[in-house]
Each structure stands twice: as structure tokens, then as C-alpha cells.
Amino acid sequence: MLQLQVLREQKEAIIKALGKRNLDAKPLLEAIIDLDEKRRATQTELDNTLAEANKISKEIGNLFKAGKASDANALKTKSAGLKETGKTLGEALNRIAAELDELLYQVPNIPHESVPKGNSDEDNEEIYSEGEIPKLVENAMPHWELAKRFDIIDFELGVKITGAGFPVYKGKGARLQRALISYFLDKNTAAGYTEMQVPHLVNDASGYGTGQLPDKEGQMYHVQADELYLIPTAEVPVTNLFRDEIVKNEDFPIKYTAYTPCFRREAGSYGAHVRGLNRLHQFDKVEIVRVEHPDRSYEALEAMVAHVKEVLRELKLPFRILRLCGGDLGFTAALTYDFEVFSTAQNRWLEVSSVSNFETYQANRLKLRFKDGNGKNQLAHTLNGSALALPRILAGILENYQTKNGIQIPEVLVPYCGFDSIG
RNA sequence: GGAGGAAUGGCAGAGUGGUCGAAUGCGGCAGUCUUGAAAACUGUUGAGGGUCACACCUCCGGGGGUUCGAAUCCCUCUUCCUCCGCCA
Image (cartoon, rainbow, N blue to C red):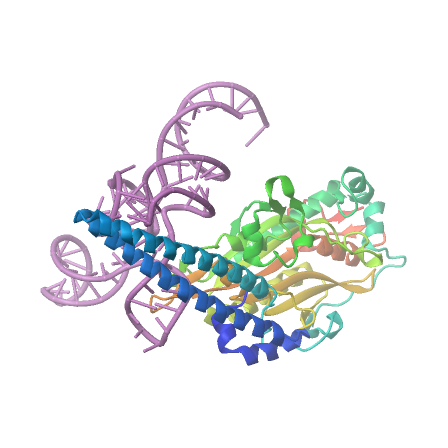
């Protein structure tokens, strides 16, 4: 969430910037600022009451020690009164603070100045593209048909044991998945990211830390008996490693990578665009996460983009990069680049990576700080990106690498697979 | 799952009702000394709120209670350790 102090000082500029999200934030921000003033006034009143009570307690102690028990007992009455007002004020303060938090949670991140205006994904700005769109063989198939033909992914079997959106990967299909995971992790660690294995279930504090809660509560699988959530992305556990931490300036850059399955309820999704691997409830992803000094976070973002580019280039998949417009930008992000691979058989672009800078938005919730040069604690910047999400990469490979008789394996993956074609 | 014990500042570790945001040691930072470094010595060193700055307030695993007053007493939750059981 945004910092109150920044909100107070730059109200007008923030309202204007949030306009890019097609959001009129004025009433919200004004309500927040009013409530914050009320909060501080109440806090001051409470503090003064407590200061008075503390003073009296000390006096009572001294009086008892001096043997003046009756004087001490007289003061107790006064103390009781203060206690009463203190209690009332404390309750009021809690109420106000909770209300204030609720409002603050409703304010999305401020879009970066480079974020274009726009309403939907139609308005995203293409900033780069690379790779030739291959000419496919006659009777080219979409990946779900290929998967069936070569018996490498079984969607029906997944329906039987769990439900729609939980595919079963078989034989070479499973091996190709594992190859991709290893290949991505190797690329990421070679680029300086430390590999981590993290829990796949998180508590609600972690959900709040990275901003999935309370905003996207319905998107996560919730294990109610234990009050845990299945992670929708490795971003949640990995970024939360730094919750309530104060890192040292010299710890930067902090670069982690992790493979995890991701679980998403995807409530409300349906139709042709969710066929096959296009949209799943469980999928695999290798994530990269960075914690950076505010002065260098955009440099880091560019480095992450360059890194993902490099991986897609090696896989020889045609892709483009989009800068998300205000209307499509995620709630917690300041700037996001989406990577899309062209799925030739479906004749459409598939999102395979999303690389974002959250600036201090997550850090503020996480209380992730670092000691700056002056020994002061400052919020760090957090970033993350997919490097990469598996299913759509797999879809892209199956479709773009199909031949008359089978599917060729991209050269870089052959050593990981142990075979060079399927079929 | 059963029985005990524990949770204090970056770390170790004292503190069992007031003078405790908290001894001491280590670590960190600054300085003295030194050609430089080490050692030694001196000072400094938790977080948040609040203020122009002070004052002041809150925090000793989380929550609740007793008391004029709680790190210290009581209840509860969580986590960790030891022993027993079970187990990939």
C-alpha cells in the first residue's frame, strides 16, 4: 500500500497519476487524509492521557515508599479515571486505524510515468518484438490436439482425479516439463539469481504482504481448516522471505529464483481462450524476484526484461513485449512488461511472462526496509517476473515446432530432455 | 498424539511487581593511538508513532486479564527444545 506520508504530501499528483488507471481517487484520498488527521489527534490525546497516568503511578509508588499510604490511595481514584478515558480513546484509535487501513488497501499503486493511458489490454503498448513467425505444416494443430495425438498431456484424466484445469503430463510431456524447469533455473542462476525452494502454502500475513489479500482473496485456494492459502505464484513466499526485515545497503542487489507450482481459482474464466494449456488452475512457473535500492530498481527491471528476452531468444520462440497501460496494470504494480509468445496454430499471442516493479508498494506492507547511507531505515523496492511460466511456453513449443510427423524439441532443451523430438 | 521446558535488542545472555527500553559480553559505527593495520582505550549503537525540533506515547513471541503500576503474576494461542509414541 501507499505510504500515508507520501499520500499527504503529494495528494494532487497522486490523484492525477491514478487517473491513468481510470480511477477517480479524489474522494478516497480525501477520506484517507481526513481520517489520518483524526487518527493523529486521537493518538495525541491518548498519549497525553497515558503520560499523565504514568506520572501518577510513579507518584503512588513514591508515596507508598515514603509511608504515605493515604495520599497514595487518594491518587488511585484519579488514576482510575484516567484509565477509563484511556480505554475509551484506545478503542476509538483502534477503530479509526482499522478503518484507515481498509481505505488504504483500496488505493492501487501509482503508475510509473511511462505507463500509457488506456482501458484494456487493447491499449497496451508494444515496445519490442523478435523472432519469425514460422510457416506451419498443412493441417497444423493447436497444442491440445497435438497433446492428444502424441499422448503427452491428458486433460480428461486430470478432470477425473481433480477437475478441469488440472492436466496430467505423461511420458515425454512430463519430461519436457521437467526439462523446462531445469533449463529456466539454470539460466536464472547463471544470471546471478539464487535458487530457493519455498512452501507452497502461505499464511494470511504473507498474502497481505505482497498484496494478494485483501484484493484478490477469491483468486486463491483457501485451506480453511488451517487458515492457509495455496500460492498463486512464487512471488508470494519468496518476497515474503523479507517481511519485517531490515536489510543492509550492501546486501543489494538481492536476486532470488524459485520454481513452484501455482494455484489459481480463475473464477469466472471460460470459453475458447481457456482451452488446453491456455489457462489452468494449477501450473508450473519459475519466478525471479529482486529486492533493490530505490535508485536502482528501474535499472533492475530493465535487466530482468533483458534476461527474459534472452531466454525466449534461446528457445527460438517469436515474442513481443508490451508495456501495460493504466487500465491493464495490476493493482500493486507501478510498471509491468508482459511477454507474449505467438501461438501460430491458435493465431494469437499468449502471455508467458510478466515483469513488474512494485516500488515501495509491497515493501510498505511487508515492512521491508534497508539502512541507507545515513543509517536511516528506508523502504526498499521489490520486483518480480516470470522466467518463465511453463504451460504457454509448452503450448508455444508444441505448436510452433510441429512438423508433419511430430514435434521437434528446441535445441537448448535437448540436453535436458534426452530426446530431440516427440512422435 | 502424550509429558515436561523455553521464547528478552544483530547475536549471546541477565532481569521474577515500581527507579527497565531493559545489565553484561560479542558484533556494528565513530574517535584516540599507529606510517598503515591489529590490539588497547573512549564514545555510540533496537523499532514504530508523534513533533519544525523537543517533549511525549507504544513495543521484551501474538492476543486477553490482574494491578495505581507488568519483561516480571494469571489465562490463551503460536513457535522452538527435550523425552515417549507414530511416521515419508
